[in-house]
Length: 115
Image 1 (cartoon, rainbow, N blue to C red):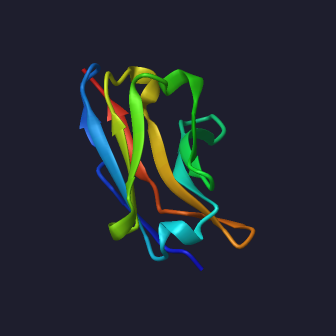
Image 2 (cartoon, one colour):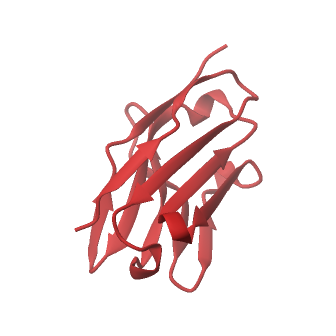
């Protein structure tokens, strides 16, 4: 089992920044993948950014150059720094980890863009 605890969402104006955090109950090194997905109302959940084993990092095209995923191995924590936020970034953001063939999800944190 992997427990994931997220924090850092909120209400922000377009052009602003937020940083999301996700703490895992297992060592990041034991996970095949860990990262962030998001789901906007009426849309499917989509990958935002993710680390996979071998230090491969994947970003959605829509966030490249604006979002940065990083990690603190000692804290088993992954971060998502979101800059230059746009209204279309409004969504529930979910931390996700892939371990032992199963994908685990956090409870989600809401990010809302509003002027």
